[in-house]
Length: 396
Image (cartoon, rainbow, N blue to C red; front, side, top):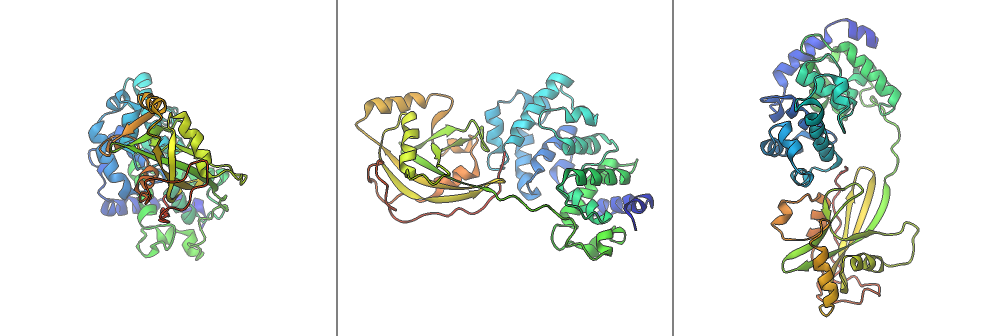
């Protein structure tokens, strides 16, 4: 059975749509659908599982129910609403896209796939998904789930992460899209990949199109789809300081990198060449630039956090500012009125754009000593209560 024969027999789409009608999950973006809600859900669902997205989606569209409302919002507010969902570039892109819709299209999302793809941060998959689901355009949206389904149905053995293979998969999928209900078909393919044709141990016995699956016929569902060997994540070490005063912690806004736009602890990346400078010494210069003269830096522990392309271990210090450095204290207070530096209370943490990485750093048990060695010396292990953070994938 060839891929084209499977496409020509005309039975795949009706079978898949009938299955979808009886098995589709009740998801909030499928209720009271609109092009805007489709766009929000598709961006949130990139690299993130449905169960995680649901509460974020509900809060987001409750706050900004229309694209014009989102376009009028401030970026800080959008990132704060996104806090903890990860991949923060998605939030910035969604905000930029909303503004572009208002500026270029009078506040209405365009129905044309090409026009959608020209919105900031909207790639080929998202443009196709919105065009199909929201506007009924006959196009095929190739996300990870759809790529897996098509590769298995058509028996495509080449690694699906290669651009040429993805082009092939989209061409095949496009042939299968019915003229009637193309949006439902797009959702059906993705639903099948998410709930039945899963990466490991696919439920072939429950699959409505198993009889037309080339990978099943070849007994290769565990080998297809194939992927190229992954590149090792970059290993990074950083030193960061927790500075508390009157129940508030000093935070700085990240302007670049994976967590751009979110708030974090004062931090400094450590040299990759194994330089002998201690984390405390490297951190002190960063604190000086913030107007903080540390009387002591006490080691609290280490936290590991795995991003998509980086494996980060943060060494957390509790810093005690020197009480007799009035000039430095005044400088810290002045800097804390800037847009990039702020003293933040526990309540304010719930209203700012903060990552799960920051929350893990703040949860490390405090160092057991209130005083410690001078930061010009290598600090001891303190209480010895290091913290190894669990892994979680997060990216812009």
